Length: 347
Image (cartoon, rainbow, N blue to C red; front, side, top):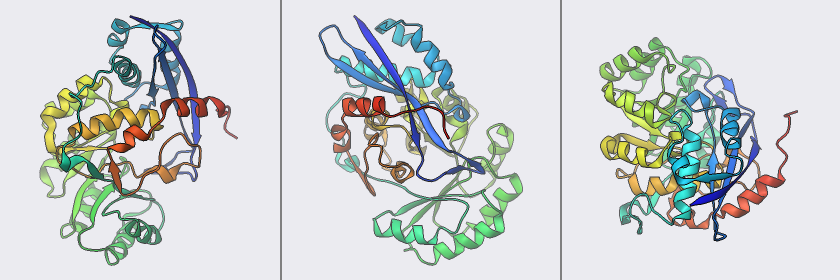
């Protein structure tokens, strides 16, 4: 079968400028695709690159799509290069929708996974105390906080103050986005010895492979990889190196959903699923994987809705994520909305 291929770009402004470690991030952009079958059916996918996580860049993705001149076949989808993981995820997911084929056997999720906790996101670089109170009131019991934005001493004092105002059952995730050095990681490890911390995420830059491995093996504090393992290829490489910590998996940028499933079957409970700040189209496909493969029932990292304004490109949900979220997403409405939004030069 040959299908028509349409696509257009989108650009989403952040409500406030977030930070990945010390770097400000002003907007999020990507490409939405639509496959049109000969019988009139259509299906949607999303290309949402994050080059810092090992994906392609947006111009390369756009050039790849343009080369098809508006027509694509299944074998061409399956031949999408591994170097274009976001293109592969979008095209393969959309084609599977056209064929009404579930990657994981279909059916309702297991009862234990029918409602997943969401990790509440705290901003980095300022005292997050008031935000903690708001998230607790909304029902969040896993809190994720960005560190490495200012000095260890300042962030340590903020963290101590936060701990005094939260219930004991709250679980913490600290995320450095690669902004720390070995000495600071060891300082955090000492500070967190008696704290319910699930893990410290991406403590060192991606390039510091040996140091990351050494810290993970030497410290009692659990570590997680995020930027280091953005794609299935990188996930495999770190598995083969013997990484003993957690893998943070962003399905929408990982590559082939089938290849990701094979990895997840081996990785088991050391996986934590997370947002790539995709629109509802990419979210829908990502959640199909999450609800099928999150065997440990760990909190998922989709507490990101407040980062964007009211652009209607993704659904809002709170401290619990239900399987019905998938059915509630209208890909055609998101496609139309994104087509109407200007994505020109940022002022």
